[in-house]
Amino acid sequence: MPLTKQEISLLINPLVPESVQHNNRTLSSLHSITSFLLGLTAGILSLQSATGFIFYLLGTVLVSGLFHGLLLYRSGGLGAGVFFAGSNGEIEGIDERGLVKGGKMLRRAAWRDVWFGGGVLSEALSGFVLGWAGVGGVLR
Amino acid sequence: MGFFSRVVTLFGLILLAHAGYSAHEHTLLYSNARLASTTALPLDIVIEALVSLVLVSAGLVLGAEKLKPISWSEWAGQIEREGGGRNPYRRLEERYSFWDVRAKRKEFADWIRGDDPVKE
Image (cartoon, rainbow over all chains, first blue to last red; front, side, top):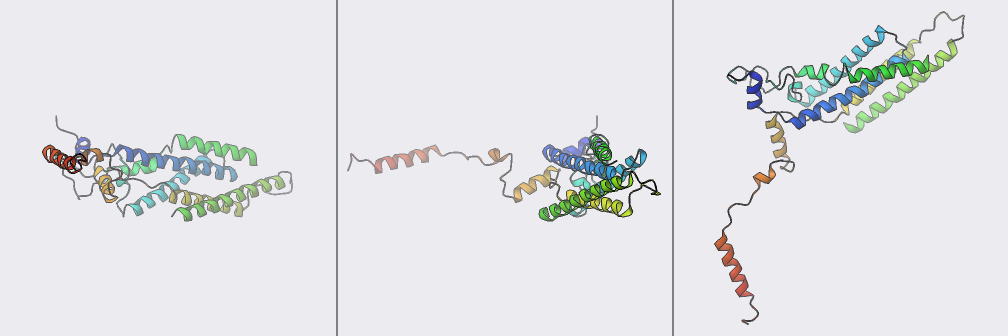
């Protein structure tokens, strides 16, 4: 059976699990702190129902955008593929024989980890609701 | 970047606290005012809260822990450039080579003879 692209990618250019874990942990701690702050702000602005969740969405987009900008800056313009594994570490532009187009070893779909990863829709959201309800209850 | 990001975060938090306190005061003052046409927050509090949010997020993002490269080659290259102190395979790479037993034995014998106190 021929190897899949993902398996070839991991053979050619292995991942360091420790670094992957460290990066994901950094991202999720950043998201949980900022989402709590977003909750505090939503409470101060006394947003209600759907407006609050739209506010959360916009806020996380802001935070992810800033983080992505920082990633671009730190990696010299290469982007998230240097720091996040994306779809299980598959290299962008690899073919079945293991040749990589462009010569840059970047992971495919790593931007998804930055924009949707780090517990944005699970743990961070609960932090947001906590801050929102708490401050909203005290102020109003 | 550490100090700068901390200052920005702290300033943003102060602004946020101030916005929260202002919103509280506003609620207290306008909750019983029947003549007031609206109880919506004044624009300056809203702007202050949003600006503080942007500042705090920027500060937190800038102050986030440094990310490590995930590709094995880059990671190993970084370790080599730092001098190999963190290399997990150092035990395997820095081994004794073959030991010349005869030479060592001769050296030892010469040393023993040279220091013989009975002979002198």
